[in-house]
Amino acid sequence: MVFEVHCLIKNYLLATLPSFSLGRLRCLLVILSLLEVFQVCPAIELGWDSGRSGGPQNSVSSGHTANPDFSASSVREQTQSACPQFFAQGREPIILNPKLAQNVRLLCFSSFAVGYSPVSRTPLWSAEHLSRDSLFSAKGLKRVNAFHEEERLPIGERSFLSDYAHSGFDRGHMSPSADQPSEQAQQESFSLANMVPQNPNNNRHLWEGIESATRTWAKSAGDLYIITGPLFIGSSVEQLHGRVMVPTHLYKIIYDPARRAASAYLVLNKETDEYSVVTLEELSKIAGIDFVPALNGIQQQEKIQLPKPTPHNGGADSRSSSGQRSDSERAPRGHEYPDSHPASGSDFREVEHLLKEIARMIN
Image (cartoon, rainbow, N blue to C red):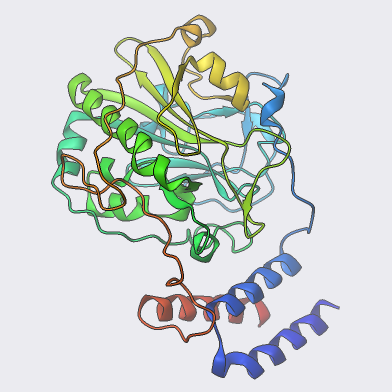
């Protein structure tokens, strides 16, 4: 049966390649990945509104490696992280909610790490270790937009640039590009594995202010650990093209190792100037994640004062005091991957990559 389907797909390719489009190629690639690798199943409710799981405190999703082999994940005891430099005492977040832990991948980058969920097709968290020196290096870099799909993820698990096109949402960085101390690190921060669909006004004003205030504090303190991510609260969560889940909330945790204390900003993913500051314990109960397992229960109950967000005026082209734009940009409307026009430039490179992937799958 699979052979017959592959023959049909080959015939379809031969018939349509002269007038191919990125949309058709992506659809074919997803179909192939579903046929060969993944089980087709209905969307899974992550259950973030049900509180912390009653599972063991020392469990975490497996499959965590800098170069994941994408084998099926299971709950296991936590071991030393593959990239411990981004976490307090080298201990990455522990996912306590079994629904949330399905096949989560740890992706290690040059200056941050991501816990990526193939269910939401977004990060569940993105972790950084900010220092005064690293931010000094970052300030001298000019931002170069380089949004791209994460090629380390299987086709069926990753999000696509086209998912965000025409959506009205920004591709919202979790670990900001303005935090990155090198050109390579900045380029890596534009991976869609580090992005969530974010309300444009939120991203460019309140959230930009939170990011800016965090950098200012890190320069003063000299050493902070940051964890940023989305929450999907409720039984009905919006999805982009039925694929990428849209967060209901966003959080940013700031951990000060000198004080061994942390708190988190918590904001709705909508146009707003309002935010809350919550303890790690409060956020953990909502998210089903032990974000800083290096802290004990009493330390996680402590609330520290976080700096007031300092958003910079202006819209999509507003620039911070470092001369950089607010960290993420809205996906263009009507200009990205139009199905009615042949690809060119950077689009051509993506077509070439997709054709190679298709050839690999059907041969």
